[in-house]
Structure formats: C-alpha cells, structure tokens
Length: 214
Image (tube, rainbow, N blue to C red; front, top):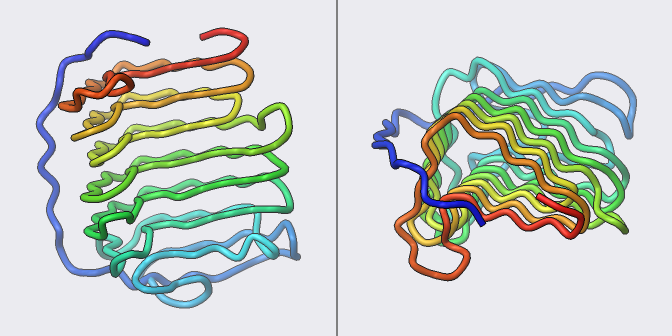
C-alpha cells in the first residue's frame, strides 16, 4: 500500500448526450468496432456502448461529438469477453449518474485486457474505470491513462497481472484512487495526482497488492 498523493481539483462539464456512429469491420470473433461522431449504431444501448465480445475484440472510441452520458444503471462502455483478449482505445469523456454505473466495465475470462484512455471520466456511483481478468493464474491487465478520473468507489480498478501507467488526475470519494490487485505481479507508475477522501482500510491513494510482488 502506498501513501497518499496530493489531490487535484476535478471539474467536468456535462454537455449534451453523445449518440455515436459505431461501425464494425473485420471478421468475428476478432473484428474491430469503431465509434466516432454522433453515437449510434452497433452496440449503442441506453446511451452507452455495450460491445458484443462474440464478434469484437477491439473497440476504438474517438472524436465523439459529445460526452457519453448513459441512462442509469448503464455503464459508459461495457466490454465483457469469454472468448479472448480485449483492447480499447478511447478519448471519450463520460459522465454517469447511476448508483452502480461505471465509466468502463471491462472483463475477460480467458484473455488479457489493454485499455488506453485519454478522456475525462466522472462517475457518481461505481468505479470510473474497472478492468478485471479471471483467467486461471491471472490474465494481463494493462491500463494507460492520461484523462482526469473521478469515481465514488475505486476510481481506477485493475485486477489481473497489472500494469497501470497514469499521468492524469485521479480522485475517489470512498475507495482507492488506484486499486491494483493480482495473483501475479503489480506495477503502478503515476506522475499525476492521485487522491481519496475515503477512510476504509483499502482507501489509499494507491492500493497495490500482488502475490508475486509490487
């Protein structure tokens, strides 16, 4: 467990809702879903993006015309795979208001996860960015973040064999700013401010726990 890191102020605008133009390319199960412009089309549900992992293993969300603001209890981006790896690149800003809604909710039962996020995430209920593998022995979870993230629970939560590289401002209300847990190794590199106002045992600015080391 690492010590508290200086907090940074987070003020994000809500704007108008994004309805994105999501179009797939390539062949299942390794197709790519590209979302840009006005958010609509394949995988868009309740104002968020819900990826069909039986068809896609890659999601690109870039240059949306507005903030992603899903209806409660939907997540901003949900991508749950039981068939392989998951790769996400996103510059989208998100604001969620549901009590259990997340910005990113990403999982894989048989592969690894890689997320590159440059958007700002403001989440009133759950984790702002949650990524978890349940592969036997722990799949790799790699998160590159340069956006400003604010979550009620763990702002950035990664579980697997974890690498987190952050240079954004991250803040949690109740949980850890960055929560990283692994059956294998955990590496967290942060040049940005990470903070929490939580008081629970694991409510550190950065909570890192690796079976084979941190």
